Length: 229
Image 1 (cartoon, helix red, strand yellow):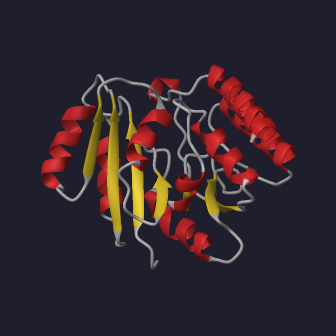
Image 2: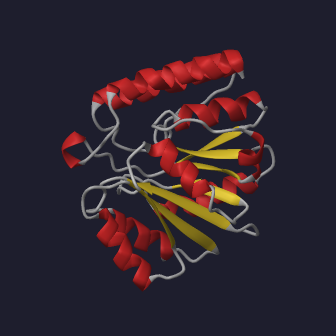
């Protein structure tokens, strides 16, 4: 890939997994910068990131004083990026950084300005049925509202050019970041290409934080930006 990659990793109370995922991202043989945002964690996340920072001075750690949500953490990370391409990476172990080459290769092909890693078109377990059905509804609503076809709108793997952030104004604080950036990009005429990825779902007992109320917020966000732009 000719363009430099900026990987932004929001982390909230992911002390058990953030170290491993950061090490796996840093180990990938490609030019990149890694920006981890500690979103006001109250567990061991800060200590893990402090140790990682000593071991890997090339990574950037941003520490927020309070937890305002995934969207706020990502916006804090986006403010630090220097690469031309941004990739969002969750701090748990549900997504596999070994999929980066496929995601980035899809972005370089003509006809796509954004790439989403789809858990649906890949051969993956779908995790708890409530999460699977919620994601299906949000993806279907996205397709209907914006006259496109997308199988996995809520995916954690979203890849897009930094210039998109110069065109849209992100406002979301929480998980509604996903439908907001999707809706605003589609309104601008961006084409989203999906590629299959590997997915290792976790449940609430393993630390999954999204709730049914976040699904309602996602629906509201999609409709809001479809109507208002």
